Image 1 (cartoon, rainbow, N blue to C red):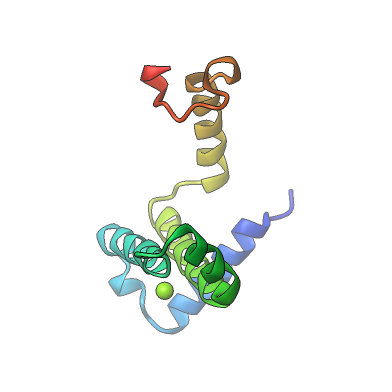
Image 2 (image 1 turned 120 degrees about the vertical axis):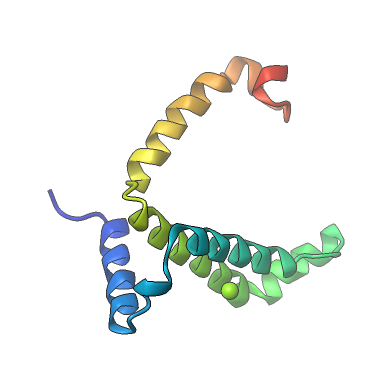
Length: 117
Ligand SMILES: [Mg+2]
């Protein structure tokens, strides 16, 4: 079976990291922190903005938003690699779990948590 796009980009990031001898810094704790920090950088682009300003930001800062999403993905792939977690399998398993927790007939149009449906 051919490698998935996710696997190929992970291999590329690992090669980038290894060429710089950065694996020594990439323990699970710091990769998780990096992931959260990058997610915060994404949030910062929208901080204190009104719904109208958010819409403007989405248009005017599309490149920055894209780069933060890439940063988040970068850390996510490094962390999942470090923990030997297959993201496709993990997301698939979570999909099944969420489908059971949030059946359409109960959850459609509701923002309630599964235990309050
Ligand atoms: Mg960033």
